[in-house]
Image (cartoon, rainbow, N blue to C red; front, top):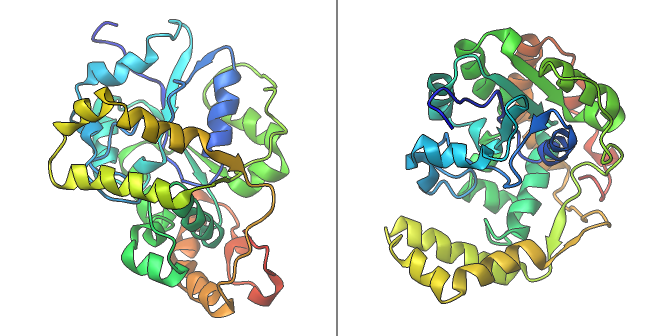
Length: 306
């Protein structure tokens, strides 16, 4: 790759808002290239839930571009990493990398999203299996991540509005083909129907041994926080790292039954109050009616709300 190489688009999130579905669907398009590796996380200093130092941030641009070696010259190239949404340094670094890059932001009702993120973070070992209130107190970034207006304003201040595409999770569920077509038009590529079009969106997996997964993740965090990165090659050599990756990637089952969520209407009420002002501002920023995201009768949500 020569020095002029640049990717064309980047997905900035949000986590648990359909980004995996979107990446899979775009990857199938013959005129689009997205690396098989999920979430390159190159443009932010810390990881989302754990907030530990992100070693990828210090890698040379050649490392980042190596994931796009398989792309044909004519293909539109991009990647999606939800970590970028709430990382101020990512905005500036992405702009410096390519000021003409196109930005895709997938957004979901922040109350639904934070609950989904909470369970997902437990299942993959990012946080321990503690009550919801304890989790957001100890890991407030999970809650603050849903302040979309606050985060997106930085992107709108840096990039032209015409280079930003907002994708709503509600539209993705209700009209996946129409939404997909909008994204293709935004990326200036021809119409296409992916085979995964009807694939269930945001299907969470449950780790059968989440306790072990949390132990593995905690060990990884310990290594980073105590600057023991020199141990990583050794752990890989003796097979610890491959084993951890196997546990993370293979000992999961798609969770077809919805989680039984017992947060209580008071928790839901608190969440809606927390996000209400940001939602009102977001409506104006993206020029969309988001009344469906505002306070509802929490008693009507039922135990299967997810």
